[in-house]
Image (cartoon, rainbow, N blue to C red; front, top):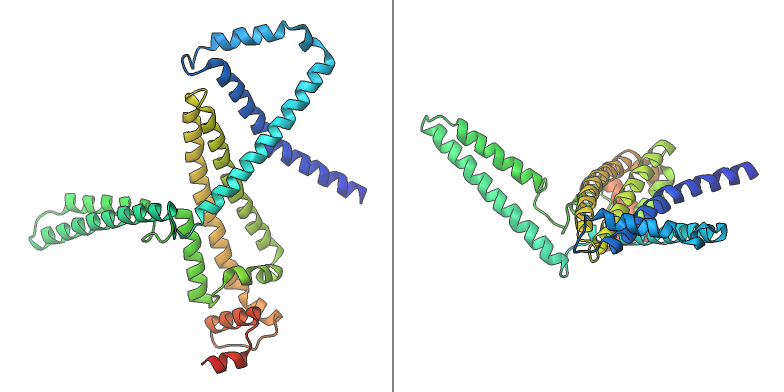
Length: 309
């Protein structure tokens, strides 16, 4: 038991150092450097070098107690900054999944739909133009290339017309819609905790890893916001923040796609196992089975369903 606790503590310490302290120390170092460089001479490294030389000449910094105190303060500050980045990442995850009913999410959804509709109109015009040229017996090589380019432009906006303010939210919404249409589960959030208990360990491990990847991408988004805040003292930090935002967005889209696909797989393969574990009678279709599961978990009996019909 002691060996297990020691190993668990070691893993938690490693994760704390890797996920929070190490990037937090880097952020603190950039912040200190930014305050010394300033906006007027952002790349004048001699100013920073002179300041570091001045610090090394201070007698107090050669005292072991002061050095230890500064090191502990730096580690604790870095950990606190890492926790703040995680909190901002959690906020980003919530924003990614917003339904877009209220501003400003509704404005973003409207803008995404306008871009999609505009790209769709351009694609339709390019296809119709290629068809007209083909009907006239004219070479359609350039027209076909244009239509293909228009199609790729629309695909970059998403596989379907947006229903949420973000592409990640669209992916989650498509998962919920597919689970309802194919498996009959009207409330995936209600069913998922029970379904999780019947999943095999291998699939649960993959889902947990995908979920962790999404959280890591969101935390990276939080670091981007923190670096953007440093731009108030040092404008190049805005470039760092923008680059981190770009990387976080790519990673978040990839991990959310993987997570959604794994959730759909879990429902497809193991909803029947959940139905059996709940003691429900067999049904002729997966949709009927999914509706029976949902009704059971909501506390709706078969007789209530018959009365409602």
